[in-house]
Length: 82
Length: 182
Image 1: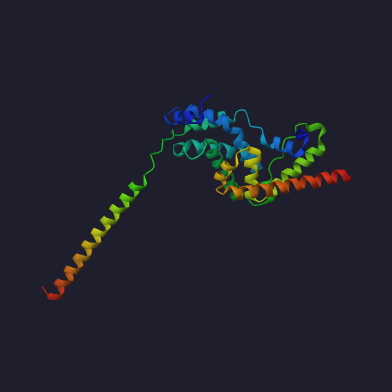
Image 2: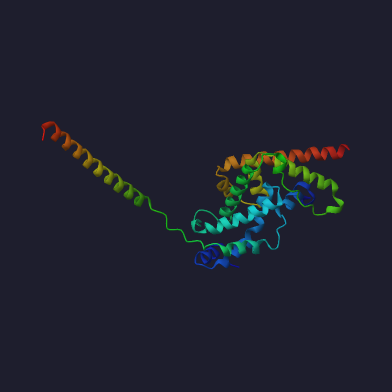
């Protein structure tokens, strides 16, 4: 019979470990000391992430282009002489 | 009794006490997992408590469309146990789980000895086999849930589980043969 199978008996014993009756209350005492959890913000959609990345790249490109133009203009002026 | 999702919504809307429903509902499952992996009684209680506190803190990140709350909670418990095992000294004795309770303690010395051997065999299993066995056979989760927690494919999980069971059954067989011979 399954009930007398020592392996099954062992599993049954292991499946129901003793839990202190006050355990839940102890946890709740700790929980009451914590800040209430905030609901998570909705996850960013893929296209929102894409749009943000594109704007970042565009901004960085503009800054780089402006920097290159400035250096180019300075070099041109330096070559021709003031 | 509140359903998990209703309790979670209440907690997130500021009714902290609703979390007690979840603690009561899952304390046994968490203890079952933790006591299968950790020997020290105090550490077990600490880890179980930390599991619930961590779940409370991060409750806002739980996504019901991805997995059941119990799966999410037991994944936290499993990770806490693995972290505790990594921090502690790797002595085998420190990993031995506490002996299982014997239902008829006074007249079952042989069974008690067998249970102790099975506990030792469980403790000696490779960690991934041990966590798989505990989650599937002792906590009673489905294969899909355990595969999600362990982050492996169902085939890998089945193979780990069958190896763990074979090891324990083999030990049981040896013990039975020894008993017959003596």
